[in-house]
Amino acid sequence: MPELDELLSAALDLAEISAELSTKAWAGDLVVDYKQDGSSLTKADLSIETRWREEIRSRFPTHGVLGEEYGSEVGQSAFTWVLDPIDGTRQFGAGLLNFASLISVCRNGVPVVGIIDLPMPGARYVAAERLGTTLGGRRVSSSKRLDIKDAVISLANPDSFSSNSANGFENLRALGRVRVFDGGAAAYGALSRGLVDICLNGNDLDAYDICALCPVVQEAGGVITDWKGKPLSIESSGCIIASASDSLHRNTLQLLQT
Image 1 (cartoon, rainbow, N blue to C red):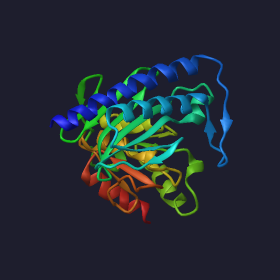
Image 2: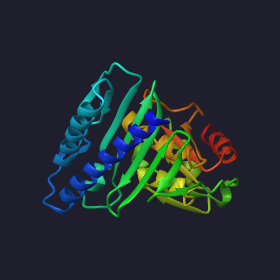
Image 3: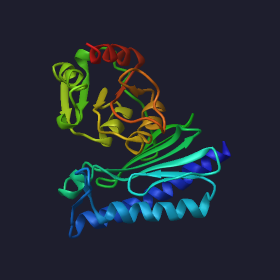
Image 4: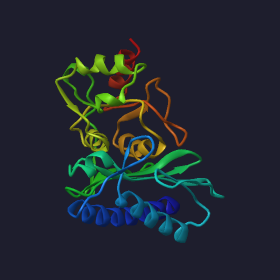
């Protein structure tokens, strides 16, 4: 698949750009501003996405781009890049380490390339359609866990679950062998390598938070959908769930509806 190889190579180059810029910014004098919706914003968010867009325009001038900071540029091809320069700016701005750069390419709205890049500590989950998921060049796989009572469950920040999703959050909060909280995109990477079995996020996600996660989870043998079990795409927003196996996913979806 030469076309997919070219896209993946370009996505990896973008990850190198963001890793350098975000690491330098994190170690420097961080200044946090706030958007109208109250979410955090740093100069690194803006500078990374600017560099990414320049690179994409140079290499793929007909491709569309959807980014968190600068919105949508409609392209003239089937491919759209979906970008989040720093996913977890709240943590990044607080000097914490669980932030990531998310890079995805969608074909006709469906994610086919995904990178979850964790520049600190230098972990990069890379996936592409029918090519599997790798971490540091090594192929990884979900745990294929079947029973929720034995599961490691990652739950997003409790504040992200509004009235229509709070019950689902509470249902899962009472289950599993281990529960961890506010893991962000790193939790979906951990699911792809068999360390986490279920990831749950609430209402506050947009396409640029979601698309890169999909190939990473799916190519590792996991399942990722919205809370109704519908596939995710560039049109998706709101609550999502990922599981280590089909059976675990079906059972967990039932718990979210009760």
